[in-house]
Image 1 (spheres, one colour):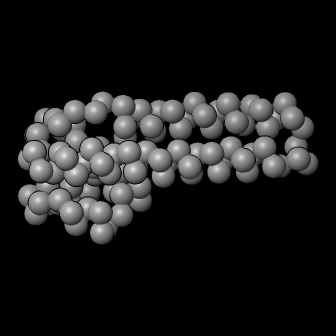
Image 2 (tube, rainbow, N blue to C red; image 1 turned 135 degrees about the vertical axis):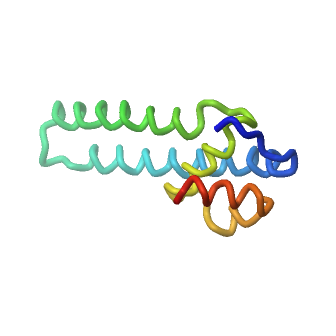
Length: 107
């Protein structure tokens, strides 16, 4: 997204960016733990599944958290909110304009 968000929203976004990244990373670690716990499968199969998952999730992390700039914040915010990494009450902290932009992109 090429539209910069207001300074006040950028400050909120910087805080919530770290929160959302932590939430997503915790989810990924839980997925890895689930794969590792599947002891009925051979270790080599679990290792392959884990590698594939990490590769896929690294793309997710890059899309949502990799390009940390004001000009990309609304797009990232939309993605984070759509995935549930930013909650509705956290989104409510932003200005009506930013919330509307996120809503337009979601529709």
